[in-house]
Length: 72
Image 1 (cartoon, rainbow, N blue to C red):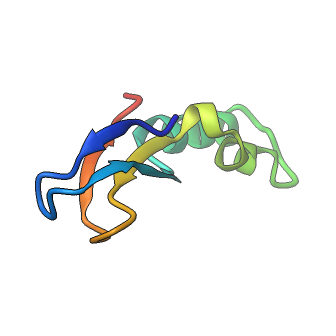
Image 2 (cartoon, rainbow, N blue to C red):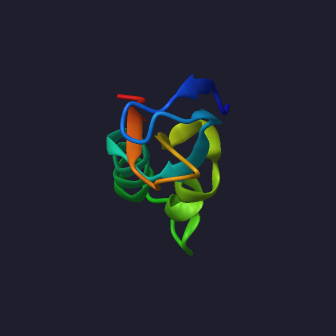
């Protein structure tokens, strides 16, 4: 979810750009599904579910990373 903020790097009032990045929770679920016998690539479904991924917030003006939300 984008957030309204003032960028500490460029000083502009912005709404952050969010990018979903696979994190520890995504990899943990993928590994768990693989170990329990989910074959045919089903273990990679974790990489398609945004609620399992980490979120990177960045400034749309200067492109700097402002915050990184870790799910796990």
